[in-house]
Structure formats: structure tokens, C-alpha cells
Length: 127
Image (tube, rainbow, N blue to C red):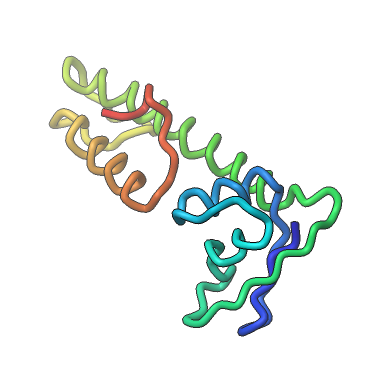
């Protein structure tokens, strides 16, 4: 799907599943004619007027989100394992630089901030 804001001329290509998720997250109806009212402007302009145009192979946004999700959760897995070890041993390794205390509190703060920003954190990586 091509999502275009006719107010500011911003445009993005989304996969259909990503668009449906966006509409549902914003409390909208996934009906074709009303979905555009629940989609936000790609550049977050103040007065968006969204136009949806179906195009084949609209995977750009979905691939970016999938890669970002994988990268964030892999990073959290590494930090979680280091934080767990930090209670019993010094963790002066590349994953964490807090060898004098437990790393669990900073890890919880990182995960909390990610969740507050709307980033999906896998259940195993949540404190």
C-alpha cells in the first residue's frame, strides 16, 4: 500500500499487514473507506489527509520493522543474560560496563523506555 499525506506530500510504502496493525493500534476500523482516517501522516504533520493506494510488493516498511524488531530483541537478549550474570560475577565485558553492581536495574529501565516508545519487546526479554 502506498500511504500519502496530501497535506504535506509525505509518502511511504507499507505492507498490508503493517497498515492493518497501524489502523487497529490507532483505534480505527479496517474497512477500506474508513481506514485512512486512522492512519497517521508518515511525517506526523498536524493536519493529515491520508490517501491509500494499493500497489504490489509493498514490503519496504514491513521489512524495516522486522529487522528493527530482531535487532532490538537480540540486543536485549544479550543484555538480559549479562544482567543475570551480574548478580554473581563481575560483568566488565563488552555487553555491559557495570562491574561493581548488578545490572538488573539499568536493564529494566532500558526495557521500560523501549515499551513506552511503542517498541515491541518479546516476552522473554521483559523484566
